[in-house]
Length: 248
Ligand SMILES: NC(=O)c1ccc[n+]([C@@H]2O[C@H](COP(=O)([O-])OP(=O)(O)OC[C@H]3O[C@@H](n4cnc5c(N)ncnc54)[C@H](O)[C@@H]3O)[C@@H](O)[C@H]2O)c1
Image 1 (cartoon, rainbow, N blue to C red):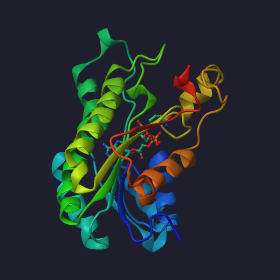
Image 2 (image 1 turned 45 degrees about the vertical axis):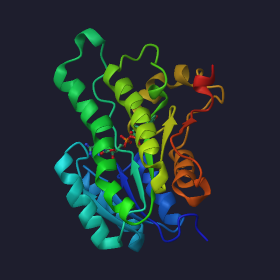
Image 3 (image 1 turned 90 degrees about the vertical axis):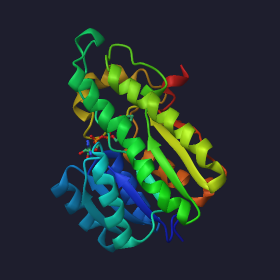
């Protein structure tokens, strides 16, 4: 028996990396998954590998108007959404605060932060109607600390905000059986950062007590747990998965 048998999930940024791993783990655990991404061909090809358990929809999560259509199509295909994973994210421009351009800042905030608000707002009515749900927002250890030598002002802002929004919505809807939690990964090898980790990998790995980078499948196991009824009394919390990196 799967931990998510009978559940309907929506996972954003599902064409690769952590979103791909979460979608795969959800399907393996019995969920049917609406996978969305801006990378339509890649996402569609992946969803077709998952068979009847997955349906792909092209979506730019930073565009508020697209969310209603995505939820409508997803619910038409599979039924009421029980689980939302706000995973899509970008690193964007990495530069000193003095050099950060307004449009670059706004783009990162749009995808990493505003979209999490849009996503929660889009699924909440259905969850309220159907008696509950579980939302998992992907933040980062950059939602706890700034990284030495890695100037990412907007990324850090956005990931702190995701933790904050998670707590806010968890508190607001706790009595409606809607749980909201965040996952805060450290360095995980995915297409987002594999080039950076290859270049700086040796140095970065020394910052991690476990002396290795994480796997997307390890983050996916945590997402399955938080999304499932096994986590029935867990809400408003953040879950660091970083090999001990920010413990020191
Ligand atoms: N990999 C890491 O080390 C790490 C660490 C901490 C947090 N995270 C977070 O995990 C999440 C997933 O990251 P990943 O490492 O799998 O990255 P990734 O780049 O491999 O995958 C991200 C996916 O999001 C999609 N995406 C980007 N912008 C989008 C948009 N506007 N609308 C819809 N989809 C969009 C991309 O097309 C891609 O498929 C992100 O929120 C990231 O910030 C990653």
